[in-house]
Length: 299
Image 1 (cartoon, rainbow, N blue to C red):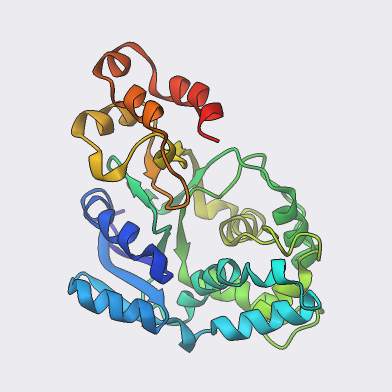
Image 2 (image 1 turned 45 degrees about the vertical axis):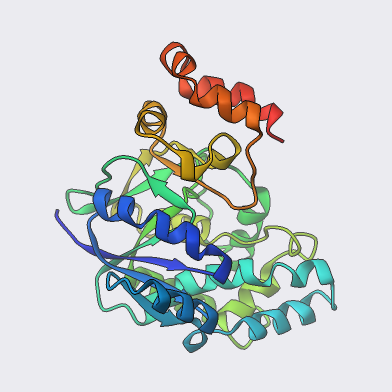
C-alpha cells in the first residue's frame, strides 16, 4: 500500500538546527506528504526564518500550553523542582497525541527531531503498518500504562520506542477518549496521565507516548500492525561530529543501523572520532561491535 503521510515533530527552540539537518534524509527515505512542526512562538519565528515551504508550523498552545503542564506537575509533585524540570519532556509527548485531533489524514508519522534515517523505509506492509521494535525496557512506562489501562494485560517483550511511530488517527483519538473516561483524578486526559505516574518516577521518565500507543494497539488492534526489528544508533554524536560526516561514514553505519541520532547533549572525544573515521578501522571492523566496545569510553 502506497500512502503519503505528514511527518510530525514537536520541537523546542534548541531542536531546530538538528531538525533541519535531517530534513533531506527524511524526504529522501520516507513517503512524506508534509513536514509538520508543533511548537511555541519562538519555534514559529525560527521556522519562518528558515523559509522552507516543506514545513508547516502548528502552534502547540491550541492543544496544551507549557505553563499548564508545569502547573499540573507542580501540583502533583508538591512543588518538586526536579519534576518541574521535566515539563517540556512530558509536553512534547502530549503534543504527539494531540495532533490526531486536527489530522485530516488516516495516518501520520511521529518522528524525533534529532534522528535521521540512513536508508529507505516503507511504513506499510500491505494494508498493515510497521511498528519498528527495539529492546529497551523501562519499567515505569509499563507501570503507568497498567494504571491507565488495567484491563489491558498483554505486554510485549520488545519495546515500541524507536524514535518514530506511524499512527492511525482514529485509533489515537479513541485512546485519548478512553483516558478521558478514566476514574483517575484530573480535568483533562493529560492531567489524568500525569496523576497516573508514580511520584517517584515523575522526575525522570514516567510515561512514554510510543510505548503507550503501541501497547494499546497490541491489546485492542493486534492485526493493525507487523513488528519489524529496528536498529538505531542513539548516541551517534558520541562517535561522530555531524558536520564532518562523510559518505563513507554513513556507508559504514548503514551495515548495522537503520537510523542515527545526533543528540546535542552528547560530545564526541577527539580520539574516539579519529578511530571511527579511520578508513582502516571501517574496512576491518564491524560497525556495531566496535561502537559497543567504544561506548564505555564515551560516557
